[in-house]
Amino acid sequence: MAVEILMPALSPTMEEGTLAKWLVKEGDSVSSGDILAEIETDKATMEFEAVDDGIVGKILVAEGTAGVKVNTPIAVLLEEGESADAAPAPKAAAPAAAPAAPPPAPVTAAASPASAAPKADGARVFASPLARRIAADKGLDLASIKGSGPHGRIVKADVEGSTAAPKAAAPAPAAAPVASVLAAPAPVSASSVAKLYEGRAYTEMPLDGMRKTIAARLTEAKQTIPHFYLRREVRLDALMALRAELNSKLEARGVKLSVNDFIIKACALALQAVPDANAVWAGDRVLKMKASDVAVAVAIEGGLFTPVLFDAEAKSLSKLSNEMKDLAKRARDRKLAPHEYQGGSFAISNLGMMGIENFDAVINPPHGAILAVGAGVKKPVVNAAGEIEVATMMSMTLSVDHRVIDGALGAELLAAIVENLENPIAMLA
Image (cartoon, rainbow, N blue to C red; front, top):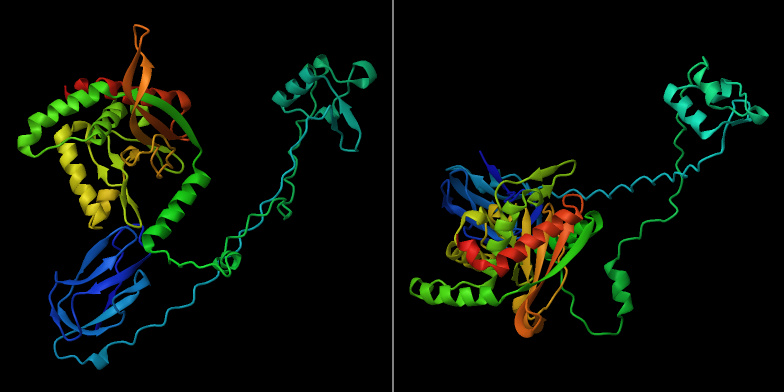
């Protein structure tokens, strides 16, 4: 019986993909485990294997087709002896339903403290603040208590000796839809922007899956994550000297440590020293992680990856260096598996190698923080003896999710990172 081959979901977040290349053609016999095609997801190009044995009867989606939804039929597999005529015709994609407009948010007027509560008949009830508090604690209705104070004002003694009936719960007001005072801005349309540039030469660049994902996730991050920023400078002279010494001794093994390798190790150890900061936001709770799984931003053509170095606190500098080089190379070739760039609790974005001295990075949810690393720059500094000398200084900015990490805790984490970088020999212990 003919079997439809469906567009696979190659990662938990994949909704659509590009059928980059067919590795089989109609009429080819395939066995379970054979590679059928290369599928380009939002992050990587991955091979798609056959699950069943059979003959490729019909290819329904041509290679190079973008925006193929997950579970869409892309080909038909026939059993031995079956005709291609037995293959089911491709189903027309149903038009996407227009997203329902969100219901307008009700506008609630803030209640201002009144000097007197209204009685049921509309008259005001005069009572001292202490009497009101006691009545509230006892659940008494002030409107049913006779005051003995000036002008009938209810005082403490009236409430304490009162046997008035408990205050009846006020009925919940009916929710009336009220138009929002500030309407949400309409999304920008391509046509409206293009009109601004009529008569000007430009090239239109359609968004691929990666750029769409970056746009969606970082928009979500800036709109929903309460960022705050902590900045420190770190003196790199001891680290640079240690790096030069280690590289001279590791040259025979083909290992060359970068400053970024030391930063990864410093962050991993700092997360262990300040374990409350090694956490992620999980919607209605915080997940406190045990291991230091550090993600590192890698720029590639058209976007970026954040491959994760798992258990970074337990790895040597040379192991971190080799692993990072491998992940970066495969990231640029778009050959990373989803589990290699998903997860982690903390991220590093280093633009220092591009000459940027300082910047603020956007948190990659669900991470609790990201460290933006600038370039090492020689500057005049005042040493412990009060003398001016030249030192290599590097600026760092820690972007923090305030739902996960408070200010003092973020400062403690950044201080631990600085301590590790300024005393790098301790990281080898």
